[in-house]
Image (cartoon, rainbow, N blue to C red):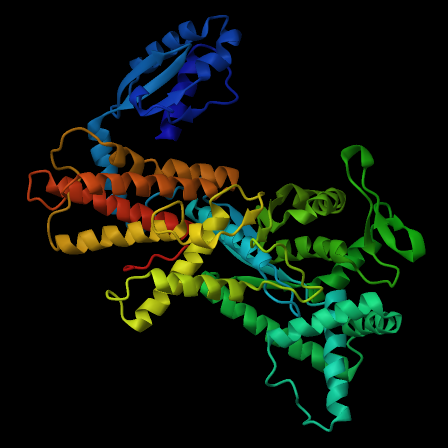
Length: 570
């Protein structure tokens, strides 16, 4: 409806010979003022050489000539706002459409025919999957789903750093275990019983030695070269083991989070290609100190100098990113490439995009960088370098344990309760991340995030389960939004805002609009449910059940766009 009203307003402005670059159609702050409002008369009154109220009146007159049947009235208000009131007939038919569309309710085709690749999560093998990766995954998965719901052919990608100094530090740490094995005549394959915790400790051991021991540092630098060249049997063995263990483990986390990637890209695959790109463009990249090759950012644009090939002749993360952009395009021929990272690399990414604009100008125009803040617990920030890591798995397990205590044990069998507890835990964590704009830091509050009554994921899940319970009690009773009823209530109108919210979330690449809307919808439904007997056998019972049905479908679709599970019972 927002799009339809925007077209109506633009056509009226055109009749009055007013060129409008922007037309905003919004919900009034006070619902008694109407269903939609626009401030175009205030924006373009000067250009029309009229007062805002005069222009508003002229626009209303023009729109009344071609008034769509969905609009009951158009009014001028205040200093020049234009308010639109929609008809009860429109609301009834729109509610019927919402129910009929089922899983596609709220979707649109604004990106139909477009190819979009979304890259996110990006954990590094040989390091643990920590809570920072939960941020990237939650934001990226939701954005990917919103883009799918907007009609785009969408691919999910994960880019992982399987080479580099962090890998060399891990392999060095594992080699200390290998040396211990040799000295003590332990079996040939000592790593079969090891897991990612051992791997994380190996990395911490290597990282600390790199900083404190010059001999160890030299060994790690040599290991890094050997990993790229694949010339050392023991290094290859430890590298292969660690890489496989890491990637297999990551898959278990992705499954919990509801993510399935279409393609995995690795730094080991982009390294040489990225290096070649840099070497092939001497006019863009130049020699720096110690033989390194750098890109000098334009300081007037706030850009700094970055190393693309280090003094050892190895490509840095920046060079690999250049290679990745081209490799991704060759794989998918995308119209848009969205890259989700933490905001600590914002300055670096701006330099990268500037360099890309000179090497691959078309790809730079297609690339969008979205950054997120940090996820912290009240205890503070983590560090994989020291080994003090808060892993995603440990956070999920801790939240799951607390969720288990809150779930109705009498209504669910033990096995089902365990499944629901994990779904509630995932919902609590993801909603805490997605409830606010992506760039902000988050301190995860266990009590607030698990509340069944407040601003939380479990509250949304519980409300959805409540609608299903009510519909189950209704059995085979008629559900009909077209049944005669008195007026159009606030819940009815709130339900029908969903498509507009999805449009905005896609336009601004911000899932928090959906999260906020779902909380508002849940509060509206619970208020309605608390004051209305739905199953009363009255003549408008089919309409009331239609409100419940549409609320249920909207919550399910909205939670799906946030990648939050929807348990049927809680």
